[in-house]
Length: 264
Image (cartoon, rainbow, N blue to C red; front, side, top):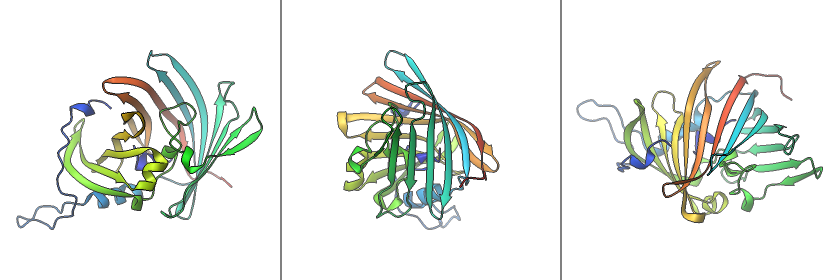
């Protein structure tokens, strides 16, 4: 999954003190200290990070309800870059009630162009286009939305570097992102805070404010692997909470990742 996690995106986030600092790049200090990047600069590094081309992978999605009951879905993912745009396709392999369902996503780099998404429903033998107003809806019953399946253009957000911190001992930048009015309407999100690793510019943790129902979503990368020189999140959890109560949780495991495959 190109993830989409490059921009959007548990643990004890509620215990972290979110202390804003400057969102403007500072000049090197008189003492010769390092230059402090702006929130926008950090997210440009995230966006520019090499995420591979012509990739294929297997996905295991575990849906966990508030009672702890699980449903497992297996998928196959294919991703191809076309210039600055990214084309991806997900096929559902099991269980039987979703088998052969297909999801096609055209992720455009142009901020003025909305991404195109289609869902193929085998039971009806029909393809459904996902309209902009539907992109805040759940993707196949998971805690990910259709909007989460694309990387939003940077120009649709304003970014602020809140502070430098650590996540499980790893140095990170804590960046707040505020979407513009149209992006809020399309995604249903009003704000997010992401934790970006300083060494490889991967978003490893996020908290997202959901407008509907005053809920919060928490994303955490549980495992990060270096595959063919590409940093790939291979274990991801997205949880939806209201207050301290977990309403639903989705665990995503990514395996058999290969790049530079012969894709048309």
